[in-house]
Length: 175
Image (tube, one colour):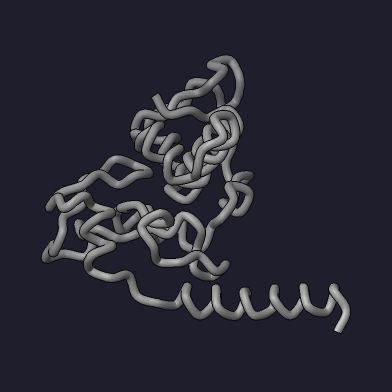
């Protein structure tokens, strides 16, 4: 067997193992460490409070895979952060901000609050993922470290980067 065949065989075996491992449920111990043994935690994307063992799904803690399981992301502490139901649902298997339907809205400069409601959570989540990726790249840290360092965005406090320009995905910032 030549060196290329051996390397391809190793890559194939590792890919199969990663896919198998990504389907494992998150252990209770890992969930406890991700939420730092707290009962209430902030969603890492929007800052909404999430509750351990909540009676309603909408206020429960979801354990968001930074690298989605659909792409081989493992259910380990280093790949998980607490998220609310809405952000977890909208992020889904979004791995890059490009997949967040970023061209789905354009608002005039200084839009009303009613007009701002046209910006869906999926676009806000995509914008925050882009912020996290940019910070991780600038500081040469992990995605989890970047997300923790910059903290959640206050989705209700979005502003234009340039007030004189139309608000679109690329002219959007969280105050």
